[in-house]
Each structure stands twice: as C-alpha cells, then as structure tokens.
Image 1 (cartoon, rainbow, N blue to C red):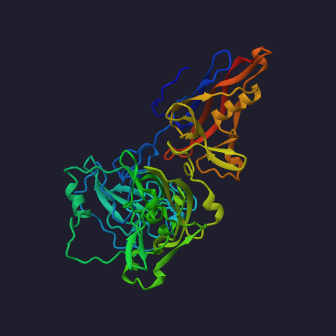
Image 2 (image 1 turned 90 degrees about the vertical axis):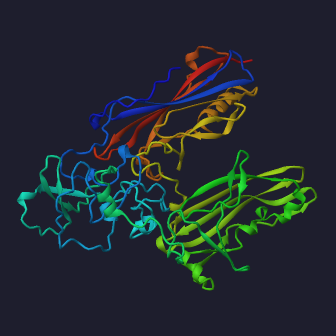
Image 3 (image 1 turned 45 degrees about the vertical axis):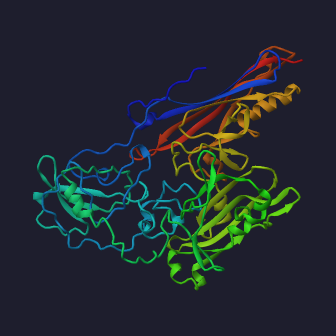
Length: 561
C-alpha cells in the first residue's frame, strides 16, 4: 500500500483545479477464518492538478485587496467593517494633504444583505453564526454592536478609483475621497466607490514604526477606564457574554452554567459559564464516596436544579428584576423525575442536559427549553457518573425544518476541515471512517471524514463463526457503516431535498466469480474511498466543490470450513 504525500504545486490557472483524496481500508486474514482480523483505513488527499490562489492586484493605487484585513486562501480571519475613513494603504505614504469631501454620505441605516447575496460564513441553518455579519438569522442591522469583528466575506470590501492628483481642481464626488502618495512620489486622488459586486477577501495591514503614529492618532483611545465609575449593564448581549439568570425564590442573580471537565480525570467544574450564541457540548465526570447521601441531596443529580430559575432576555433586566417582561422561564420539554433511593439503586439520576435557546438579535433571548437524559446508579464505593451538557442556539421562530437541518460544510464551497457530507436515502450525514477503541478493537463510534484532510485508520475485528454471506455483510458494515452512503454533496451547503445538489457514489464490491474458487468465501480486505474535487467560480474567490466519489474494495478469498 503506497500513500502519496500531499503537496501544493505553484498556482496557475483555475481551469485545471482538480484534486482527489482517497480513503483506503485494509483487512488482512490467513487462508482460514480466524477469530481476530485487522482492518486498516487510509484517507489520502492527492492533488492531480493545480489551482489558482487568490492574488492581490499590484499598483500604486489602493485596491480592494489592499485595504483592511485578509484571509489568504479562504481561511476565515478577523475583519473590520468598512467605514467612511479608509484604511492606510501599505506601500503608499499618507503624508500628503487629505481631501475631505463635504458631501460625503453620513452614517445611517445600512442593509448589508443586498450587497452580499451569498453569505459564505452562514454555515448553520436557523442559527446565528458568530461574527458572520451577513447571516440573516442574527437579525442584526448593525452586526458590530454584537460581534467583536466581522468574518472576511461577510461585509462588502471597498473599491478605490484613483487618478493623478494634478488633474483634480475641486471634487464634488458624493463618495469619500483621499489623496495618497504612491511609491514613485506621485500624488494620487482616490475616490472610495460603493461597488456591491465586489466581495474580496482582504489583507491584514502591517503596523510598523513608519505608520504607527498615524494609526494611533486615527484609532487610538484611552487604554484604561476608571474603576470608580459605576457601569450600567449593557442594553443587550454580545457574542460570548455570560447569560444571566435569576432565582426569584432567593432574589439572587447568577449565570447559566455549563459544567465542563477539567484535569486528567475530567472532573466537573461547575463555574464554567455558557456564552451567548456559543453552541457547545461538554462532558465531565463525577465521583461519589457516599452515593446513599448524594443521591437525593446533590443538586447536580436533580433535574429540577437545571430549570428552577428564569433567564434574563437582556442584561439591562438586572435593573428591574420585578419586571417579568425581561425574564424568560425555562420550559421543560419532557418530564424528569426526582432522584429516588430504592434499595441500593439511585434512580432518576441526570446524565444529560440539553438547553435550546432561541435568540432575536439585540432583542436578546426569547425562549429557553431544557430536556434531560436520566439513568440509574448502583450504590457502591467510589461510584462514578459521566454527564453530558449541550447548549444550542438558534434564531427565534425558525421553522422546524430549518432547525433540524444539520450544519453546512461551506456556503457554497467546501471549507477544508469541515465534514464531507453524504446522503443515505433522504438523510444527510457526515461520511465516516472506522475507528478503534483503546485496545485496538473496532469501535461502534466512527471517525468523521473532513474535507481536504488526509487520514488513516485501522482496527481489529473479531469474527464469529457464521456463514459466508453474514461474514461479508459484517465486514462491509464495519468498513462503511450499517448503511452504505449513496450520494456525496457537491457543495458544502447541499440541500438533502434537492437531488441535483448531490452526486452518486460509484461502488465496486468484491467479485466472487473472479476468484475461481467454489469452496471459498470472498471477503473485503481493503476499502478505498476516492473523492475528486475542484475549484470553481471567480478567480478572486474560488469555491471548492466535489466532482465525484467512489468506493473501491479489495478482496481476499478464505477457505470455508
């Protein structure tokens, strides 16, 4: 078995942008059925062509790629929203006089969506993606009020049009304008044009000793705030802010907690706060020296302790706790019993907590619901319990279909590292590889295939003494899952209901007749999944899409007893 290394050839034109990555699984066995067999899976990505990387136009005049932060190759990084004051352009001196246009438009209500018909960072249907300033599910007219920055591609980049400054006597342009000095010492008069067709990724500007003072003057401010000032609570939650809760029974304000594992043993840390718009899943462990007492007294085991409070819609609700319009009760989705000690069994112990939180932009939290998973524990020395906590955010009043749709792997093009989407029947899911447990035996859990990422996996499969057809079925299911995927998504935002957005996976199973053995059982010993993909679209912002995929099995015959 040979594994080709992954490399990037020099960028040329977009037309030859084809690459494939493949997944290989190998199962070795002696000539007779053994009790232990080895399954190996390799996931390789090998470029067969070259593709164009986004490049910045050269020249003295500032361009869209010269202004603001950048995201080379499509990787999302922090970006700032455009404003009337343009960013200083690298390589261009701003020592010359600045021409201020009196008729420059004032700051007003701006709708970002018409300028960005495709929101590339909207990866979660029905949910507000953090720092995705074009996501309609966020319901934000001014996203920077909630987000600390805007992801590249989620705001319209600026476009400069420049001419020699000596040609300009007086400017009556309705757009902001400035005078720059190019590298040759020629002064250029530049106008910031509002061009909705442009949506390029931008480059981070460099800060050095030459331009530091100018940047400090333009963007500098106080480094510290007085500790003696009494700060009023903010009017709304920002992304990542702790979510405030209120216990009416004790008149106590607290935070919504999401216990998380700490240390080598993953012990539960109760103080971990949940962050606004941050959907997260955590797992932690609890150990009990005396479960007889803890069963009914420990609040972590009691479902009631996870909903006996209200959630503040917005932080300013702290100033008027008697006003219930700022409070949202936690709705119990399914009934959950209280812990009960029956003999040596502690019943109705909380093993899973799932919060569903619906938000509406700066209007805050609109609805909170909770559901539980419960289990029974046997009272014995040093009893342990593993708990799972999940918090999901979604846009308020979204349809059930939108809320049940899985996350996207790109919008539209695939993002490297996101799951490769497969379709079985009408259900969309991630393509998976087999995975081993700690002892090397094949695990029920599967490893998620990531787009553009090579992987190798293997495990040992204990075979039972069964007939040939059952043996073949068991090995096939171990390699590709209980049900073999039928289609693969062409783009990362493929809709399961739109069959044209999926391409069929070609499959070649073992050929029994080719082995020329009447008393043999032909079993698969290797699975290779090949995925052919390419870049398409604009050269300035290419989108990765899958052209095709296939499953290839290598087989071996074994003697039937």
